[in-house]
Length: 169
Image 1 (cartoon, one colour):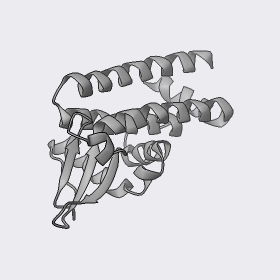
Image 2 (spheres, helix red, strand yellow; image 1 turned 180 degrees about the vertical axis):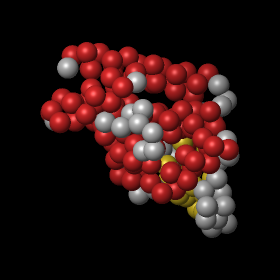
Image 3 (cartoon, rainbow, N blue to C red; image 1 turned 45 degrees about the vertical axis):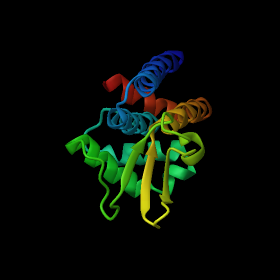
Image 4 (cartoon, rainbow, N blue to C red; image 1 turned 60 degrees about the horizontal axis):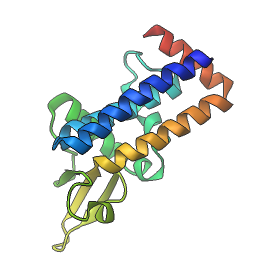
């Protein structure tokens, strides 16, 4: 079991370092968003024991959303559409939402305006915008890693599932 936690520690470090560096050093909002979407699915795949299993992308992704918490859960369908749009076409689109903004903390007052990784805001003209702040999402992923590791430490069944899934990779 210690091997599992050592392996997960390496995966976490790799993921978080890449996402943080890309967010801090590059103007690559879409690329960081793809990384956040992928990292969410990886976390869910580890917890569900489905990492590397064909045909379970949505299940992995939704378990990852659960680990991220309430702000993400309320937008799980939108985020699934965004994931598909970004992964398969590199377009930030969500059906039924005309305005999808992918931002970072580098934008003026972004932390104050977009404190969550995802939210819907209305501009001065009353137009709705679905906002993804990849800087906040990256921070939330680090917390989700804490949630995942805590769940694995206290639940033997989850540990066994995670070990079996990772050994298949």
